[in-house]
Length: 258
Image (cartoon, rainbow, N blue to C red; front, side, top):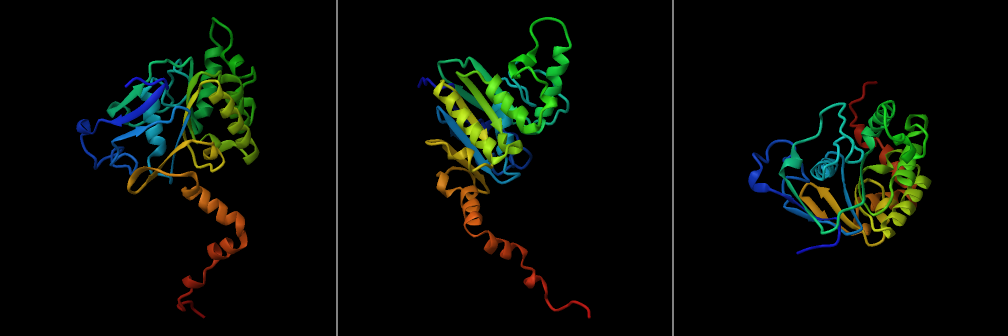
């Protein structure tokens, strides 16, 4: 069936997997995976550290032709070969339309993207790449400022954007600003796939949320995510939760020396 969205489904080619006992196929998010249907506007992949959500997003990005360390499809640098082989075992179903723009933001390696931009701009030919990011070196801004320069200046709409933990360098206020900018881009015919821990970002209305856990990947409602429940519980009764977290009475088993 043809679809008008840029990417509609990601399928793990299980029959080609050599072994589910070894990384990355042994990860909780990957081991039972068969396919993920993607929302035409925004899909979130959430889960605990080590669950495999970022590995999955990275593999989707590489399958789509993006550089493993981030950037647009024109970036082909590599500071350290650390991405998994998972992309070789994915089939990504694309729609009948081709996005005009696209980008893979990987928070942990965005510094390397900034370095690559400076390196390329030192060479001859064409206007400076940094002009597309607002004209100011990404290394001369805070991590959060550089993230927002990317989203505000470089993302041009009608695009496919994959973001890996974009909230990593953003204050709550900046996360709200990012949410607003994402909405503008979605109204301009863009599609997002985002791995995140942020209950602010995943609150986007109508978003499809997949949670990676010990049992695999399952669709979950916003209100049922652990991120929302834990954050809400803490903000409602911070002292009560702190008392529980800091209680060491059970550790005192009476064996302390006098």
